[in-house]
Amino acid sequence: MLLSDDGVQRLREALTRTGYTAKGIADRLGPDATAAVGRNDFRAALRVTGERDPLATLIRLFVCGQTEPEKHVAAALPLAEALEAGIVEKHGDGLRQGVDLEPYGDDYWVVSDVPARPGRPLPADHVLGVGGASTTLAAATMRRRVGTALDLGTGCGVQALHLHEHAQHVTATDLSERALRFAATTAALNGQDWELLRGDMAEPVRGRQFDLVVSNPPFVVGPGVATHTYRDSGRPGDGICEELTRTAPSLLNEGGTMQFLANWVHVAGEEWEDRVAGWVAGTGLDAWVIQREVADPMSYVDLWLADASDGGDPHRKAAWLDWFDAHRIEAIGFGLISLRHTGAADPVVRVEDLRQQVEGTLGEQVRDWFARHDWLRARDRAGLLATRYRLADGVALLQEATMGDEGWLVDRQVLRMAHGLRWSEEVDPLVLALVSGADGRVPLREQLSVLAMAHDTPEEDLVDAALPLIGHLVERGLVTPEQ
Image 1 (cartoon, rainbow, N blue to C red):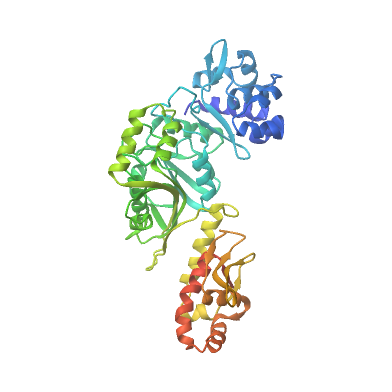
Image 2 (image 1 turned 180 degrees about the vertical axis):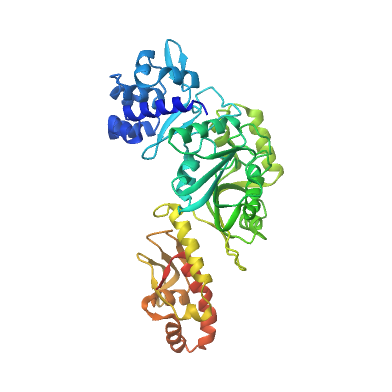
């Protein structure tokens, strides 16, 4: 930990007293300056905080990255402890931030390394703070009360903070001793107690099982050269993500779930879906793999070199791109892998694109997706036919038609969801008939009997065709079973 227990207590009291919280900062700056800070434009914030009261000093130090007079910092922080721990450091004739001390959520603080500064490449052991990936995973995690939770590659501890809200015991691992010191400080500053273990991903917890496992791993795809601990696993390609997938069965209690952010390669001549599905094969786990973004190799390399302020190294860039070329990698996908240990003999594995925005948090959508599969798994042929189904709220039918000799001819029909996962799906006449009759009043068996008579089709043939379609519609959330 960066501070003693006493030092942590004094720092927490100072931050609370000054109102250095997300709400306190937003109230002090006002909406316009707060929005500008989100764009890294600090001009308005500096104007608002010209009067150096303690909150203004902390905003200028830790939000705007300014050097402040020592007397003002001393009025805002326990100065001796802050200097000794490196919370602030001497710079010129004043003090500047030595770490990133960021208010997070309603009443948390996260301690990490200071973000990259222009012309200063990040050191190999840099510890990231709150970023896009960490907030993405936090929003994608299914939240339920659990006994044990594990955060693999915790960094400064963002995921562990969330896990503590609904887990009785939180364990977190990291390869970096520096990261564990930051994580311990984050935990103590927020009055939380985590079990922190040093080691490579799941190695420190070998032989143990958990109810929930999350990870924002060092997933960056490359030749396996580890230059920065926070992004490079030392495994070539997407090996770290395959490794995590295959490790999941040994980490999960029955009923347990594992969710992690992942990158995977798109290899020329191969389907990326088959590649990632192969990671899950033989695990016995339910899996939902969703791809949220895709980048070409040039954009990908530029992104990660810039992330570490290392974009000016042409040799590093060339070597990275040459490695992509040698392995026929034409794109890199980014997404979420959600795994669940049910012990079922027929695990469900879905690997698909989900590029559209979803309603609510992704974690809520993942939870509901698994719940729908639980419902489907619990019903046999007779149970599905005896169920009444209702079209989900807000589903619209879009038609594309061309003018022919006999008028407009419908070429394509698409169902579009206005809520939830917001799928858009092309449908054939049978699917359209099923959803059109899904009003929650008639069991599916009766609905199919009417359709069979109307189209002069053997009823059992129609049942055989309709049941897989109903399963798909329920999985997608396009129709919901009436209880």
